Length: 113
Image 1 (cartoon, one colour):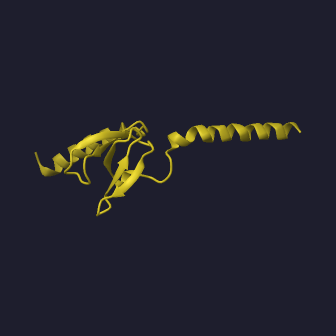
Image 2: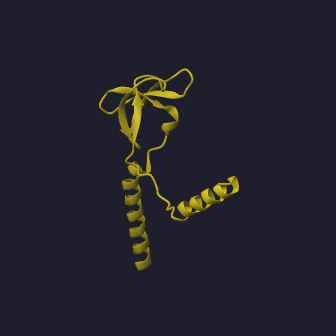
Image 3: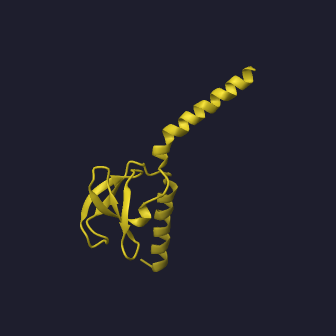
């Protein structure tokens, strides 16, 4: 088969897969693997859920890994880029829903007056 024909065939196959593509979103219930030391050469030791609150204990010399303490008291290493300063939306949602209900109530009462 000629090179041109192979390229055309592969392009048609790729377009078929793209036409059936559907957007998806990753759930917050994903586990992040923790390590026994500050690097990928160390074995996995534990997991945490996305959005879980942990305590920072220190960083590796290159800053790529952070030593954290889990709620159960165990410590492990996580890639620093997987940590945020703000709580996850999952943790914030109950508070935001309560605020929304409060504002809706205020609007409803203001309209009655």
